[in-house]
Image (spheres, rainbow over the protein chains, first blue to last red):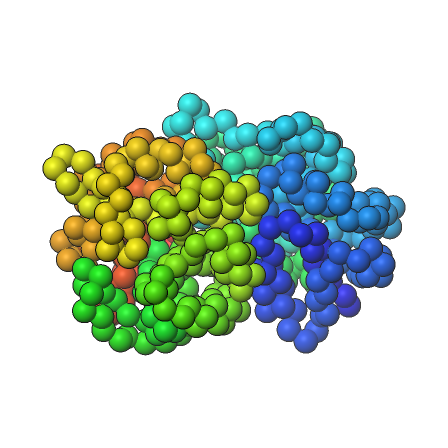
Amino acid sequence: MNVTIVDYKSGNISSVINSFKEVAKEKVNVEVTSNPNKIKSSDKVVLPGQGSFKSCVEALNNIDGLSDTLNEFTIINKKPLLGICVGLQMFADIGYEETETRGLGWISGKVSKIDNQDGKFKLPHIGWNEINIVKDSKIFKDIENNSHMYFVHSYEFVPNDKKVISATTNYSTKVVCSVEKENIFGTQFHPEKSDKFGLKIIDNFISL
Amino acid sequence: MLKNRIIPCLDVKNGRVVKGINFVDLKDAGDPVEQAKIYSDGGADEICFLDITASNENRDTIYDVVEKTSKKCFVPLTVGGGVRSIEDINKLLNCGADKVSINTAAVENSKVVIDSSKKFGSQCIVVAIDAKKNGDKWEVFTHGGRNNSGIDALEYAEQMEKNGAGELLVTSMDRDGTQVGYDIDLMSKISSKVNIPVIASGGVGNLDHLVDGIKLGKASAVLAASIFHYGKHSVKEAKDYLDSKGIPVRI
């Protein structure tokens, strides 16, 4: 099996690569590329994302054919894709970081700034927070409710259809931190930095 | 609920761990990769490497240390010391650092923080402030505590937030290595002034100091070196202690 981590020159993905390689060991081939042909032929795709919504979308659109290929992989062929952090946020129709930017539109909704109640809550939301699992998700197999995950973000994904939400975390409000819609998975937290539970989520995704 | 973080810091020189007493009188105490792994297995919320002599010496050894550590530790790794340019930041991130802390370069050239937070995202840009009390204010020091910039630390903290820093790592130069506790006054003043998380550093000698850093200093995270480093306390002991004092920690 081939798992492809999409390297679209947006932010630091070495931790994502290290964690997937650690979990995959010899059983799965982990490829890091932005080449649409390689993405087409892979079994699973990981879409990381750091920095702003706008910069990630722009970086994705800067690579010829990448966005179409991801669309075909996920929406037409319905193969499993995991978005991490801004990778998840880009599933939305629209994001409001820096300026209004169109997302991939895979899961209808918007990405807006966390309401920090006039500075009562510091932003970015950085550190370890508990996840409240609100529906069974394949990537949460053997993950206990209220497990700690590592977060670093100031914006949150607000999906229109609440049924896609698989976990939330409490920070000022109930922030959506994981979604599952058919073959599309996403975590706002960083499984690659969330110690053994994070690695378990990666393992669950690889084992789908 | 968001937990307060405990961050063991490893001062690294030529690829080996040392801990300074007031930035001088260094003692050798081990292999950083091994130490980092012990800390992350023990529940450290984050690991910090500070390449202490990097401003002056050949610093390629740190890249090797970061690369090896990031393949073994799956918690956030922050690396600082001698980070001068976008190029340095890029290289450290590529080696597997999750955040980079910038000290001297942030004072000398404000563009470094502005540009790097735009390029890599605020989440990976930590501005390290070495502050020393002078009368009723604190001044920012650079070059590993050797040079006084004369800049007011509180104003500087606010400016760094504006420039795009995602966190501030505040070290009291007066307290560093003394083990008498954080400069609580400094921490709470900076923490109240900015909306980004503050990591308290410098002066931890016992577990109560960690409690004070969070409760009184209003820090989001506490950084310490020697209390963990010489086996005085484990990270787990520290967390259990904080937990017993009602501080939210990841256990």
